[in-house]
Image (cartoon, rainbow, N blue to C red):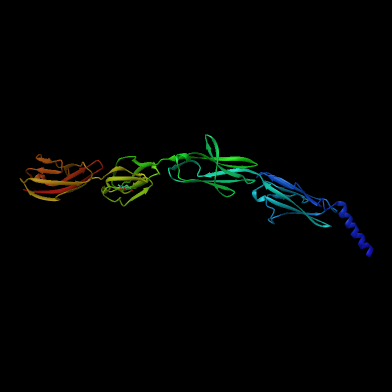
Length: 384
Ligand SMILES: *[C@@H]1O[C@H](CO)[C@@H](O)[C@H](O)[C@H]1NC(C)=O
């Protein structure tokens, strides 16, 4: 009994010595590390160099996360393949071989390679007012982590500029903009995979007083309609536009959208002068729109019923309000002919010097302007 135990112990010890476990681990992975670009495919092969086959092979992530949907294992568990590698696949992969001699593990690491990407905001061309400050932020990604620098491009070459920020972003501040600060700046990011730059151009803006202008200076509309007035302004900083009405508040039914004023359901009282006011730190500028709201005539007669005697003289006055000019016309209702002695004036007066009994009847005044027309009547009774 005693003898057998020691024999078995010797066997294990000699196994240890022969395979040299201390130098060559019983489980190994090829390759031991891989660096690939996102979207590529990578494989790790786990091999067991000890003990009798088959052994049980298992793969785990070092961070204890699940392997992931894009990770596939070969039928015997030896080959681990990651297709369409993403950032989340980065890290260590552990192969665990369970042999009759015990459990053995080996680890391989996957890292991503990515050329730098740079984004500067605000970007492109920037107008900066004299004396104002501007902050330029450059954010960078890439694997391995790129170095970031802000550079001023000049005729004499490049100048490296001091910046603040973290490992993935760099902030450049230009304070008190002056003509010396105008020019081209670039943010540069570099790693083993490449070098990328993005440029920003700073233009010095001396500022300018506003200048307001309207598309149409005279507008006409008809009562009940809507009208839109457009105002534009140049200047620096960009002027703020406001609308008002001369000597009156803006009509109740109005809306303002940027430089555009819209008036709805117009009434005659909305006629008048509208003022667009463009204001910035440098001053203000006004532009005017004259609005004329036209209305159709509304006609009335001074007396609806007139009684007179034959031989009397008759005066019928027609009145109308509405947009001028208004034309008046007197006619007789029912087709009877107008007295030969009748005269009418431009301002709506009908005169008959000597009434006859046949002048009895209804007289109609028609008032017309360019928008429409309206009628009013007077009944005349002549007694014999
Ligand atoms: C236009 O704006 C300026 C500055 O705000 C102001 O002084 C001026 O009175 C305004 N004009 C009108 C017509 O409102």
